[in-house]
Amino acid sequence: MGNNLDRRSFLKTSLMGTVAAAVATATVAKETFNPLVAQAADIVAPIKETSEFPYTVDEKYQRLPGDKIYYQKVFDTEENKTPIKFVNDDVSKITGKKDTGKDLPRINAEKLGIKGRNSTVSETGVSLFSQHDGTVLPLRDGEEGWRQIDAALALAAWAVELSFGGFTAIGSGPSGVIYQYPINPETNEVAKEPVAVQGLYNWDNSLAEARRNQGRQWKFNSAEEATKYIKRAAIHLGADLVGIAPYDDRWTYANWCRPKHKPFKLPNGSTAYVPYNLDKLLKNEGVEVFGLNRFDADWEKYAGFKPKYVITVAFEMSYEAFRTAPAILQSAGPGMAYSKMAEMTNKLATFLRYLGHNAIPSGNDTGMSVPIAVQAGLGEAGRNGLLITQKFGPRARIAKVYTDLELIPDKPKSFGVREFCRLCLKCADGCPAQAISHEKEARVLQPEDCGTSENPYTEKWQVDAHRCNSFWAYNGNDCGVCIAVCSWNKIGQWNHDIARIATQVPLVQDAARKFDEWFGYNGPVDPEERIESGYVKNKVNDFWNNLEPVK
Ligand code: SF4
Ligand code: SF4
Image (cartoon, rainbow, N blue to C red):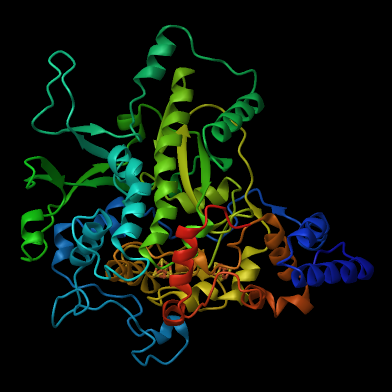
């Protein structure tokens, strides 16, 4: 409870919180109670700011090498030799429940069609990506939510990221590379072979240099003024949230890398560049990946400058799409956000470059987005390992633009998420792969808690990336249940203000998680029940049948 809260205010705010929750479904009442609840939340659970990064980082902490990111390991030739080792193979370690096998719907070799052993990281990843990009049919093809029409919408949403972003969503190296068939402007002939070009996340600062050489670098009167203009531009260009983080080397990957690609002739005569042996895969002759091109994380060499600040932006993802999680249709939500990330950060970098300032747009590549976003004051890190924003909960994607322009950084903010996560556990219970820790407290993870894709020595709840992604491979795409069921994933500030109150008021605290379930938010938590109860099917039908956004 807030220190300056007297008994009368406490009762008033408790009452308001409880009453407001009780009328959660009535729009008129919501409009009436909205300001009251916000006021109550500000009294009971004021937003706190800290000067430093708010979670413990042990002195043994070392930067995570980019080639250890799960999605990069998929294309590392060494990784194809060793079957996936789940960090907590005994699921009871993270669930606190006895491992009956039934509690462990992990995707084993047989579900992926590899008899007698677990699949390797490469087999799992290639299975996922080839379903994700439509090269092969999803394993669950035909189930409502996994039909061709559902998958087609997901792919359409991802189209800008896949065709112009260079798929840095998978943690690909800086300035994700794409392959295009250019038309020769002199002859109007279409090139027979594709050329590799840099995508929307390109690192080309020549425009900024040209402006400087022309003596036309735009000088802001102060860092405050620059910050105001940059934030205004970011919102205009499509960001839903924007904050400034000081550049912090700890969050930059210790090395950068990209998968090697090779050409394959497609039946229509065109050539596809793919980081795995497409012929073998399509003939069911196994998985062969081509390895990684690694390079030093050297800002001066590749960007021409060392960043001072990271303009950090976040994008809301569709509530309607996430309600269908884990259906493949859910992926239409993140797909839209990833496409926006590539487009918007390219525009923001272009804005800066036209002003003669260096800028590097970045999706998931280059550095870890969650701690950067925490530092930029966009939200807290939740149990599910994701950024939880005040406005959209975890239903937001993060991108960033690194720059050396002088700006005023924001401060990390907390509004009760970590306290709430201690009690809630919905994401951990709902995870079909049982990949999320059930431990009450976040703690400084040790190497033995972490797989080789996770970084130890920072304070968080453990999320087993291998376990998560093995479910994705079975699911045919990403999953999103840990976002969909989250207590902060609702429409409107009003509900989140209730959550803020619930973190602080003893009477309501016990019922924190129950609010969601009582009022039917976010559907069944149990993963099997979620699908088998018909909830997912209903939400898929709602999605296709309603043009109006859910309010
Ligand atoms: S996306 Fe979330 S809920 Fe789904 S498997 Fe991964 S951690 Fe679990
Ligand atoms: S579902 Fe609950 S425990 Fe998980 S991140 Fe959201 S609030 Fe935290």
